[in-house]
Image 1 (cartoon, rainbow, N blue to C red):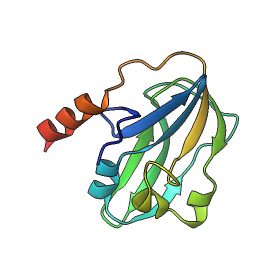
Image 2: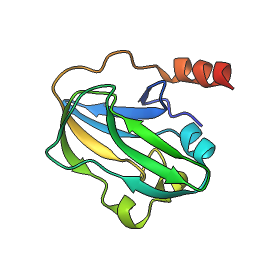
Image 3: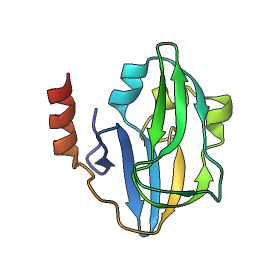
Length: 125
């Protein structure tokens, strides 16, 4: 399941941009690969983050995986619901399972369109 109104990274994060605010999460494919997610390490509000750098991690019954920021900017909100309910990433990865909101200091680069991401995951597996 790939949402047609998002941009994607090769590390399986998605991005929805509204003006200079980007909402970021992990893809349906990523949560399927991880299995039942049991813990999410979130960054702090106010942190400055650079595109391509680690912004947190997720742990599941199968593995742990780092999360990478698709854009550069300041973190203005984290999804605090994930502290008590990390399974939101499994249940609704493109909705209630969003991870952070970033005020972008530059436009995202190197993002994949929905079609390019579909081709990428097809070629990887």
